[in-house]
Image (cartoon, rainbow, N blue to C red; front, side):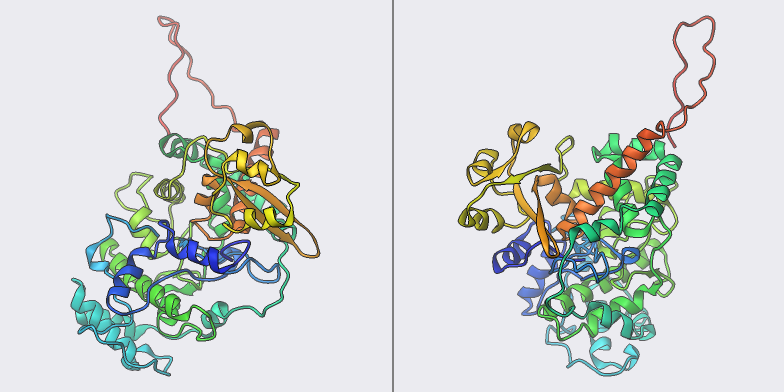
Length: 450
């Protein structure tokens, strides 16, 4: 998808400086090596979104998401203290610290001097066996479809929040979400209690990302990441940064494969390399995924229970505050100058409610008692007037999954819509109660959630 509702030099600096950027630590390390550093991937289809970040607001004609990878990745991430030391940013440098050879032309990375030099650098700086790394990269092939998906869309395409929203709040996704919630009600309840993240938000994320596991991506992840690591479109304005990010994600995939005893050549996912029910990039999987079904392994490909816990844990890692709304309604009475000032920080919460109102962004009710900063978030509606909301810090946290205000609000509203439909239907089916023992006036306890 896209990163934000607006894209200005100031918001670009905010993104690059964000403590939430999951590419922050590779950036610093790569810079120290005189190399460029990682960032976010672009738009993907709803079926292939991931914790991935982006740079432009969504054009309705383009695919809905870009995710993890937040690169919001997203994506989707942090300068994580628990990151494997072996994953130090090995980007655009050889084992001796010199620049990689010039970009090759072959679609067979086993025949590419730059790809093989990168493989040697990985082996030299990690515990990964050199021949194993070289053999994996040699099996990767450039995918033209992945290059096309990452190529910037033509300028001038109108963004339309109403049309974008309609792609997700629709009957098929709603019914699938109701069935998912019914099937995993106990797990969602457990995740909400343990992490403080609303069940509706988790349901919204998995619904937008993969239509509840139906659309997890058909690209071979090794091919996708190798393509983006070594052949990222040069027409992209941030090609060096994106190249470095995907080289880091390719390394993360190799580390994940060894740690989880998975075959990297068998993994399938989005064109940006995102995998499983929640569309996590390998870096997010290694840092934020949890064994929520308690079977001794983390499986985001086949376990919706692990996906539920991992999504909740992801938000906690990015600063989710239990009980805080994600946004409030807002009406505008701002002068052009005040409006520009309100929009300048983009989705980064900056203004206390009194300053927010003084500048003409009028809120009411619970918003007046909000204790944290607010952001005026604008979503364009084509030729119609734009929509606005007052975003809180929790709204900003949701955008860490995919750096787009459109994506964040779609996720939130899908989850809320499904919750409303579930309430209308009477909520979860009543569980039969065990008969109370005659010797005790107390009702028997509910069985422990799975």
